[in-house]
Image (cartoon, rainbow, N blue to C red; front, side, top):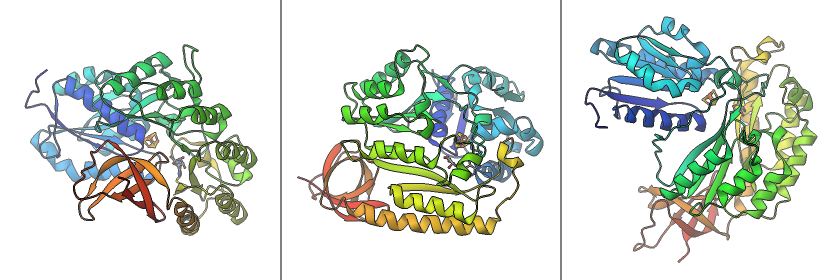
Length: 441
Ligand code: 5AD
Ligand code: SF4
């Protein structure tokens, strides 16, 4: 379909990888409807924000953007809010930002073509999920932005209802795609030249094949065995559904990357209980032990929340001691942010903001020291990296290891490593967040 020069859109994404990948599907859908993507708000007829509401700061970003560009409505531009804030706030967005004419949660993206028609007819359109949908957003029109590495959603939504988390309310109920459809898409990606496939799900390892053919670990292995696939990643894993068979799959299939992201949230049993995570520190550590007993060294990363209501100094110290016990390669730490609808909104004993900040800094500093030490062990090792690009200023190439670490490297003058290719690099130096190396000739 040729693009109508009038039908232009600009899209900005906030939030997680699921949102990034949803956006690739939304872009594909719009292109198939005759729209053309433009790089600036000024050039666009339709301005879309794919939003995140995981923490308050993330949520506020979209309202700031809408306020910044409100004046452009006079030029006939239309505004749409997609994603988690759209689902959470619904029609209230029209009150707060009357220049918005489309509000659409992620479970309604499959209706976008019809919604766009209504929008073009000058109507206000709302697409919200009532947590009832059984369908996934599968489309042949995904416009993946990177030609070598691509996301593939295998499970959408979340039924876990952790006490702090807005996701079950914004992304609907947990629903998996059939293993046949996942494998067909992965094979299609490999045929198009993608060598790295990243399987996505809010809880990727809670995957349940509706056709009953494959467990998550079997699906992982099957994707890894597709000709042309060199790397398979998967994120995010929930400890509750993390089985030993996942580690066995990584052991058995060399294309499965040496990295597991296993968010713990807290090292204290009391806080884990209040968070309704439904595992104990000990059970979590058991899973860590399985991962650490793998034949290949698997990098482990995590998410942590500090300042959950009622978190005492002793609870916080349990989280600190967990860092020593596990020795993560990286963690994302967050200050607890009260979210609409969530059970923890009702909890008392809120932790003051300043105390949350203090704990966050202590946690981050401790982890930085752990990483400084841990990254050193790679010095002298030869690792394969996927080339991601070049840092011109430093005259270094940017590579990514199977463990998902950045390994910046130099290459001889006459060699130009191709982006997307795989190259052996010897590590010569280390920092808390990256490695330095030289291409092996
Ligand atoms: N406050 C702070 N952090 C949160 N996360 C999820 N919900 C909240 C919240 N209300 C964090 C968790 C999760 C990550 C994606 O975001 O650590 O794993
Ligand atoms: Fe943000 Fe969660 Fe929605 Fe992802 S699923 S965009 S992290 S609120």
